[in-house]
Length: 130
Ligand code: ATP
Image 1 (tube, helix red, strand yellow):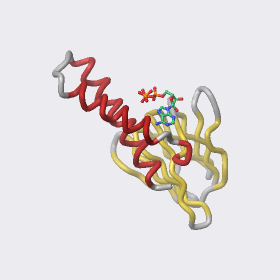
Image 2 (cartoon, rainbow, N blue to C red):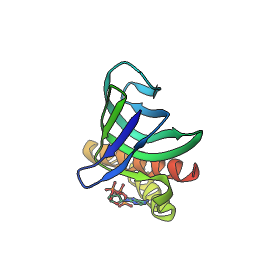
Image 3 (cartoon, rainbow, N blue to C red):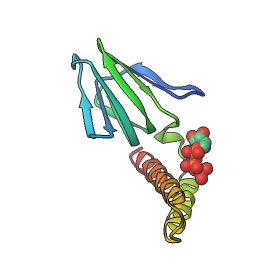
Image 4 (cartoon, helix red, strand yellow):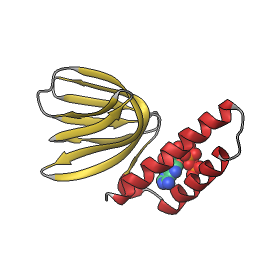
């Protein structure tokens, strides 16, 4: 089966895979070849693919995953290969988000800080696994 991970800026991944694991808004899911058609909204998190027994990790920051006829398309606002993550930058973003959350801001700011925290955690998780 095949998977494309696409943002509005670029195609981040476009290869054959044996297994796909990601996190939808309803929880984690896995896709093996010949899975029935699926369409789901994605959470901020890590998408893992297995190729010939080897895992690869990508951050996928929301969006939509569609699978049909052994073709997966993951459309997301931001995606990074775990191998390309700037770990120091993600750690700084995590600390900034934590500091914002400790400040008791208006609800909009809290949501933004929570999203920034989730992105930073996804980046650290994707980079640690590589
Ligand atoms: P920061 O506060 O560090 O900018 P952010 O979560 O606000 O983090 P985004 O708005 O999600 O950043 O991403 C902006 C751009 O920077 C995207 O192209 C994204 O791929 C890239 N990017 C952000 N953080 C990292 C990182 N730690 N390593 C590599 N690329 C990153």
